[in-house]
Length: 143
Image 1 (cartoon, rainbow, N blue to C red):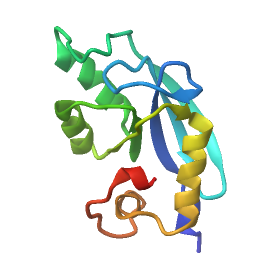
Image 2 (image 1 turned 135 degrees about the vertical axis):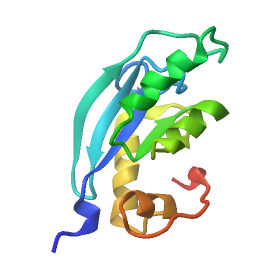
Image 3 (image 1 turned 180 degrees about the vertical axis):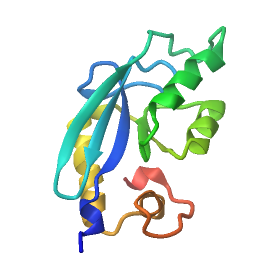
Image 4 (image 1 turned 60 degrees about the horizontal axis):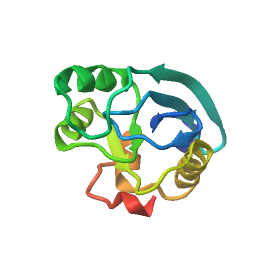
């Protein structure tokens, strides 16, 4: 039987340079999509978007959110620096768990941290994404 920790988990990372988690959801130029398991990680693709301001003030907000949410199809986790309430609600409804980080960090570091979680005792939201049990509230800063 295959170890569930070796089942790849698809994650998205909001980025403006494809090297760093350094973008807000609404203004991210790209999502770096990775498949991550406890023992391996593989870059899948970069999904690009038109540039937008990080002010959070957009003329047609829904037209900026909807394509980004659609781009997350198949992902379990989304790492961002910030995400507004309406966007977060749409992301969650799409079955993706958004994780806000306080500061920019390398994509390699984010991937490594996911792998460490998968090798250990994953938090409830991650167990749910892996199909290993029900989720309950957890503070993402612990990641």
